[in-house]
Structures are given as C-alpha cells and as structure tokens.
Image (cartoon, rainbow, N blue to C red; front, side, top):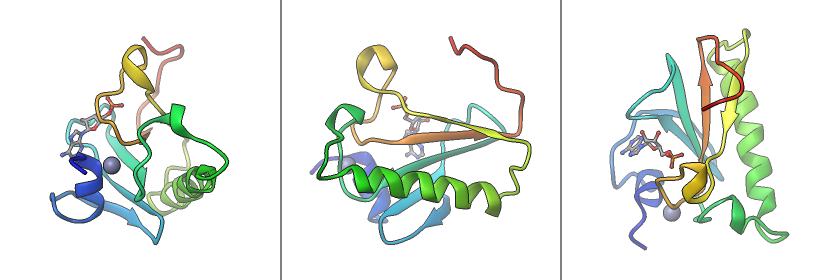
Length: 112
Ligand code: AMP
Ligand code: ZN
C-alpha cells in the first residue's frame, strides 16, 4: 500500500525514532508545532479514527500505553496534549491514523 506512515513504520522512509515496540512506532514530526512533537502510530494501517472498530481498538489502546511511556522517557512531567485529526474538517493530511503528542510549551485551549 502506498502509505507514508506505513513506510516510515517499516523503515523504508527515514524518521527520527522516539519510541517503538511490536505494535507502535513513534517519531519526531518533520514540522514540529511545539518544542516536543511526536507522531505516534500503530504499525498496522488504520486509515483514520473513523475506522476504529472492535477488531482493531486494541491497537489504539497500545498507542496510549506508548504515549504514557514516552512522557516518562522524555520527562514531560509538566504535561502534554495528545491530538488526533480525523478527516478533512479535522485537518487530517496523512491517511494512516496518528496521534500528535505535543509538549514543552503552554498549549492554548480551545485549539483553532
Ligand atoms: P495531520 O495533519 O494530523 O494528518 O498530521 C500529519 C503530520 O505528519 C504533520 O504534522 C506533518 O508535519 C507530519 N509529517 C508529514 N510527513 C512527515 C515525515 N516524513 N516525517 C515526519 N512527520 C511527517
Ligand atoms: Zn499506513
């Protein structure tokens, strides 16, 4: 499948690794929106949050387990934000589900 994040997870396209395990890969966003900006993905292709179902939701649970590990690994004790953009109005630009982990600045709420 011609998917950018499948290729990144497989190591076919280079990335700066932040965390990996059997199920999850996390890497530095190429255009960081905060001093710390990781992209966390399940290795298995899921197109968007709209495609989460009973058969694959365990992979999303693993993404959040990984996020907690990354926060400890990177000493993000001041907090962080996890964002998923879904579909056109949500601002999703890559068709492989991913979660932004943003940290090391005071993040405004609500987002724009
Ligand atoms: P989204 O707009 O939510 O779909 O997020 C896609 C994110 O992927 C953006 O923040 C991009 O900066 C990031 N991105 C796109 N290509 C790459 C790449 N080759 N390596 C790392 N991050 C990327
Ligand atoms: Zn993919």
